[in-house]
Length: 366
Image 1 (cartoon, rainbow, N blue to C red):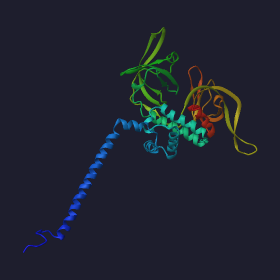
Image 2 (cartoon, rainbow, N blue to C red; image 1 turned 30 degrees about the vertical axis):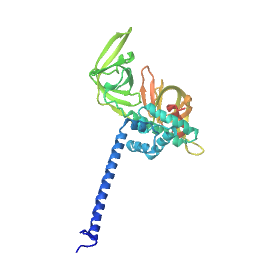
Image 3 (tube, one colour; image 1 turned 180 degrees about the vertical axis):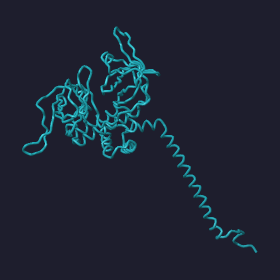
Image 4 (cartoon, rainbow, N blue to C red; image 1 turned 90 degrees about the vertical axis):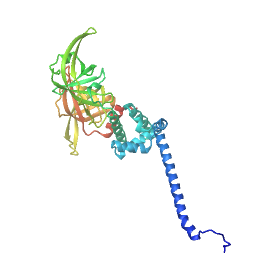
């Protein structure tokens, strides 16, 4: 007898059993579609980030905090230094700092613009201004070290190379030829006639300062001397071997400026104040004139005709810098050609306001 309900063999129990299988298959297909879509989007994003359009946009947009954070992590800056960098970038609207600090001029542009705006808003205290100059110098060193000199073959023509004598004197020589085999340096007449000039076939010490202010020490062997007549004058030259071992001097903690400012100096000693019993500075009434050769927040060099001995206390004044009676100690006295002397002075107990005044003059932000 046939059933009025039809002839199907399925049952409700079987239908319920097959439903989860269908849902599982649909879920897997949906998941696969989502994964494929995410992969496609990821590929598109990766391709876009490699495109010239994206890189140009990344380089030209304003610096963000995460950019400064990445720079801090890479260069080892502390949190305070990173905070100053971000403040400078934010105030000046400097483009992405990760891509746009390529030259010393870029660092100067960043901090020069920020300095003007921060000073106008009375942001600076003596402490924050000192830190501002400090991180500016660190960034300058960072930029300079990105393109290090690895061989004397890289020294351009017309640049100065200084020869260091056994007694610590420095003589400036000019690069007039630089080829694969050797480097030719022009020697001033007074050095050529001096007993201090480099000896042939002997290794001698030299220094070279790049346009970015980085100083390298190297040792080279003197090959031979030449004397020729050029442009109606006698030219003395020395040919030296190349060096592949250049040691950079990055130990300075502050920027140094080279100048020829008139200055004065006098002897300094510590004495006891009769009323308070405290130690006070006693400046000699004998004041001598000199020429300020270079200066930094840590010290200076003065050229003078007076052969003052080393380790003596001294006070220095530079009228054009509006700095007066800065205490210091002579670390080294060096004889110069022509009978003068170079006094290398390390400042001691330098007031922070005076330190900032010196740094302001060095950076010339105003």
